[in-house]
Length: 543
Image 1 (cartoon, rainbow, N blue to C red):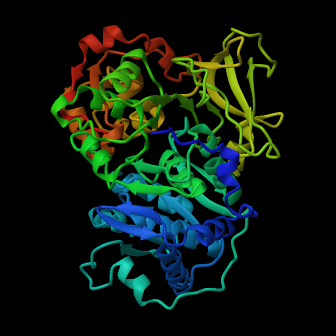
Image 2 (cartoon, rainbow, N blue to C red):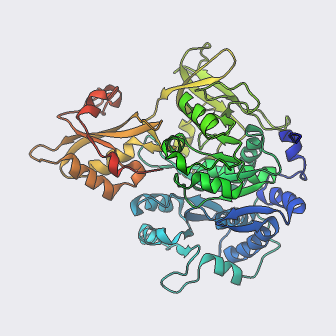
Image 3 (cartoon, one colour):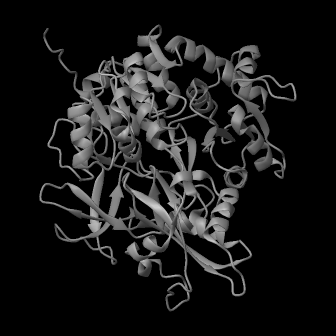
C-alpha cells in the first residue's frame, strides 16, 4: 500500500477560510468544512463540530443569562471533559475569561486563585465541589458554583442540563483577537502563583504553530491525557486538534495501566506526555502494552536515550519530539519534526507555518543583558507573537519580567553552532516536578507556618523519573521535638499532592545570605541531605 502524501503545515491550515484570530471566526471556519466530522471523543461518545457549535450557542445564552459580560472571569476546577471545549468557545464569544485550576488543589490553594482572579462563578467536577465551596465562601459577592455532570445536592441542575434548558444565543460576538481568553496561574519565586493572561490571538497562534511542530494532518486523532488546566493540553492538544481539523480524544485522567489500551481502542495517532508519565509507562508490565495502537508521534520533554529507545523499539512509536515552553511564551522552541533531532536539547526556533506571521526570536544574555558567545551559559530571553499579555493585576511583576522588550525566562541555557539550545539550570526558585512548575517559596511558607518549625527550605533534587523531586530541610524551633513524620502529616494538610516533599530532613541550621535570606544554592548538591532524609516515596503523588 502506498504511503499517503503528507500535507505541509501551511497546506493543512489553508484548507480553512482565513480568520481574524478571534476564536469564534477560527471555529466557524472549521465548522463550515467539518460540520459532521467528529471533533471530540470522550468515553465512547462523539461530539461533532456541529454539535459543539450548537452546545456553544446554548452555553453563550446561559452565560448571558447569568449576567456574565466581557472581561468577567469564570473559574474551572474540573477533570477533562468535553464541556471545557464548549466553555472555551462560548466564553471567547462573550469575551469572558476562563480561569482553569487544578482539581487536585486543596481549598486554600484554589482560594488564592479564585480570589485573586475575582471569578464570577466556578464550574467544577463533582469531586471538587466541596473544595470550591470552601475556597469561595468568603468572597463577596459570592461566586455561583455549578457541577458539570451530576446534579448538585442543593437541587441545582448540572451544567450540561442547564445548557440544554437555556435558549441559544446566535448573535453575540463580543470577543476579539485581542480579548483575554484565559488566565493560567503558574507558580513564581514570590510564593504566590501569577496569573498569566493570554489573548485569543496568542492562543490561536500557538495552536496553529503546533500543526507545524508535530506535522498534524487533517485526519489526526490527538489523545489528550494531560489536564486541561495546563497550556500543554489547552493550547497544544486541544488547540492543535482544532487547528488541523482533527479529532481530540479526551481522557478524563491519565492512567498508566490503561494508557495503551485506550490508545488502541481510540485509534489515536498523536499524544503529548510529560517525562515522568513516559518514565512510568516505560516501567509498567509489558502485558499492559497493546501493539495494535496507532500512535505515530509523541510530544514530550525532557527526553533521554533510554526513553527514546524504549518508545521507539519496544512501543513502536516512530517519532518523539523534544521541546521547550513556558506558560508565558508557549510554542517557541522544538526539535524540527522533519529533523534534525538533537537528543537532550530544547530544540531550535519553532515558527508559525505562515511565513507572514512574525517569527520568534531568542537570545542568550548575561546579567547586563549583553549577548553571550556560542557555547556560553546565560539567561534565555525571548520575543514571540505568542507572548502573554502580562500577569493579571501584577504590573510590577510584568515589568520586572522584561528587559528592553525581551521576556526573561529565568532559565540558563547554552546555544550550539546550529542554533539548538540546551537547558542548564534555573535562576529562579522553581522546582520542576511532574511537568509542573512548583514554587519553593510557597512550600516554605505553607510548611513553615507550623508552630514547631523555626524555618525550612525546599529544593529540587534529581528524580529517577526525570525532572525533580522535592527535598525539604527543616530547622525545629528550639525546645520542640518535631519529626519528619509530623512535618509530612502537616504538608498533607497544607499542600496538594504535587507540592508535598518526598524527602524531609531535620537540620540544625540553614545557610543564609548577607541579607539573611536562606541561601538555597548552598544546599546543592544535596546528596548528603538526601542520605539523611526520610523518604516518603510510598505516599508520593503519581502523575
